[in-house]
Amino acid sequence: MATVYVPKETRTGETRVAVTPETVAKMVKAGLTVQFEAGAGEAAFISDSELGEAGATVAAGRADAMAAADIVLRITAPDAAEAASSKQGALLVALLAPHQNLDVVRALAERRVNAVAMELVPRISRAQTMDVLSSQASIAGYKAVLLAAARLRKYFPLLMTAAGTIKPARVVIMGAGVAGLQAIATARRLGAVVEVSDIREVVKEQVESLGAKFIPLPEREEAGEGEGGYAREMTPEYLREQREIVARHVASADVVICTALVPGRKAPMLVSKEMVEGMAPGSVIVDLAVEQGGNCEVSQPDQDVDHHGVLILGPSNLAATMPTDASQLYARNVWALLEPMLEDGAVKLDLEDEVVAGALLTHEGGVRHAPTQALLDGNDS
Image 1 (cartoon, rainbow, N blue to C red):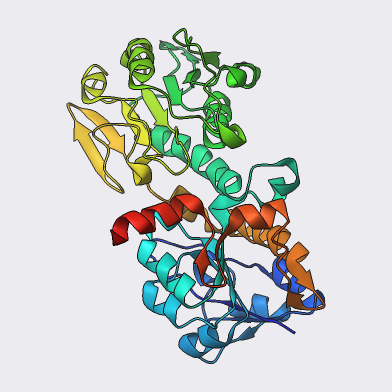
Image 2 (image 1 turned 135 degrees about the horizontal axis):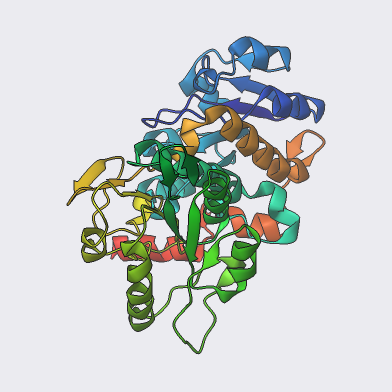
């Protein structure tokens, strides 16, 4: 019978937890022994007693529990020291950000830990219930609009009052992925006029179905949609043309929400310093891509930047500001991934399975994810 361990997250500002009473009960029913670090769920308003009632127990000590656990479930990557002290052959499931944590990846491989990176789960129909990026991005898109509305100098909706009519706020959303679509829906519910920029013509219908206007694209020979439905990396010439078109819309916007990402690469720079300076003082930009370099040239991670009277917000972990729902969704994603790997209470990895093969970062001493291995090779040379 495999033992699951859930440590308390140590990253600054991280409030989520990798299990909930709901998923603990399912794990216990599947024959797993579940242990957790005292207080692991308290920042997500999940008490030790709630996890205990679901069938989990408090581990005696973090280091001993990490060294003995067959399965470790967490939100963020361990540090290199914890990775090196993990049980050999253990299964680690987390958002590992391998391109940012090469020392951790190396330690996991050397320790022969089988590490599953939740962000590498392939975007196929069968894996939708495992898609952590989508579940957490939806929260970020929603919260980004609320942040912007709270910091904006004016109302979002059209208001007709005895003192006259107040025009609605104009919102431009960069990127119509999961975060962008949720931002559109939230901004529209608040009554704003919404315009959307995306390099994928295929999302135009979705954008318009939510009541927003799709900003026309430059003419091009190739589609903007890449693998897994994400935006592909476009040429500098194309991005320059797109920025020129978008700049006119940004100049008249009260709010810009930036959500454009290309997996495994630096986020595209879509809002230049000059574009920011063309906006009216009191306008607000929220850059959700800030942790991957940002879509806005002047944004800074987890800082409020005032540039020529325009407020630029750079929250790097908005999902953690809604830890109850974020943890519930994340835990369900993890269980959906873990359950098919279990056989008679033990982990059995099927390397022929498309989901396992896509998400497995390290296995039996090697790094299976080719882009990460290339980064490691480059670091070692």
